[in-house]
Length: 323
Image (cartoon, rainbow, N blue to C red; front, side, top):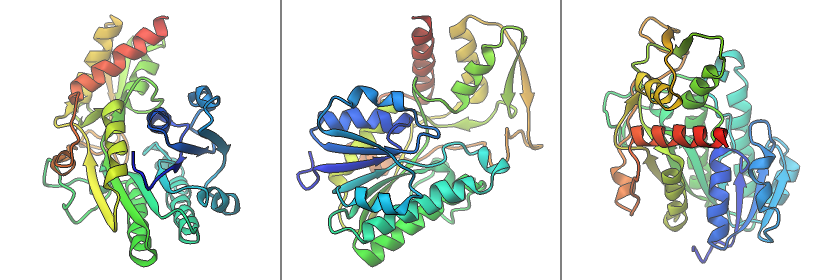
């Protein structure tokens, strides 16, 4: 337990990663305030913590600056997880990443600037800030960073804002660039989408966005939470950046086969490509694998490969739905 931190604010705490982080922090004895505006987060994800005297939930939008400043001033450190979580939404709504990622983060940092107490932030960024790097696995020092989606651009802008506030206002920060995080309580991403499509009994096809050859890193939620918690003991002066992902990749075709086998289904694959090179949507990155040597040097270890993470997630979803 970090002795200099007693009160923690978790933004987006009712979401997939946030609601997985909350019980771990509570078990370590921290007092938590969770805020979420419940557009994608779900209140039922955190209701079981309501009886814990160290837990408090506030339904709050990060765009509400007045209320936000009051909450921030009660905390020693912020886990900033709140964001638009779906890359594809940026094609239809070009404001969603700007408001929910960039403006929200700026509001949070401004609240920290004027706070007498809260000067530490741990931010969940994304592997998509790298765009389509030449170096695979991609280390934290790779550049230039050229994101190819509005989501990626917004995450990179948030990183830059954090760096600026660190440089000018004495804030300390850790930035985690996450690969694709998977787990049974996730409600977005390729596993969720494919299982949802397979629930249509009258459909003889399984539709895959892209040509199925997209190769990416998938990390099980437990491994991700281990990394986030590790940040508590690593936060110091300045900004530190760590990649968080698995050591291997799995392609979409393999994910589809894992799901079909687990469900005992035989469906013909139908591919829907957005661009000539087989992407599934605008901003889709076809090849992603992060170098995690830096975070492993401070004690983090991976328990599950990409394929194991996918298989474990699918099995748990199937087991849950059969109960």
